[in-house]
Length: 238
Image (cartoon, rainbow, N blue to C red):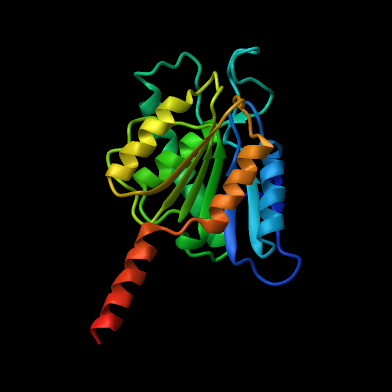
């Protein structure tokens, strides 16, 4: 099992007491854990009893400098020489290690999977979205900023709330693909929200973060509504 390495993470922990939630933050290709600091700070302000941990990807970034996503940081999987045809295979190959890392952090905090949330930007969002598709009972929520699915979703992840957030002017990962995926997920019965904000590009923008915080505060999964309606119906019959 992979042991979490605190030296490779940015962690914000409760001032007192044990964490009640765990947010794992996942940066984009070519960046590092520090890229997610604005989101980490917003989550800490809204959930002071949560553990907010931004982790680094497992590989050194290997793209050509000056590419759409470049930097001296890390990556979750290589995009060098990638094409639309082999992208799903690259993501699939990276998933076992990624899932092991998520589970290791959850174990580190003795956190039930329902109380774990994955929040990723760009390539980090790809990993988060695909991980809950591939692995049941991994996380209860996903925040996907400026991301994409490697493959069109074929089923709704069980008991997972998905929050898709995108800029309308994103030149790297077009928002239309995520809107199509969100509509498909709704048809499949998933709990999903999709927010596309105008005039924003491929960035972890403050407006997207604010919208994510609102969704976390206000979104009620359909299964919760259904349970409440069934309980109300039984009480009425009694």
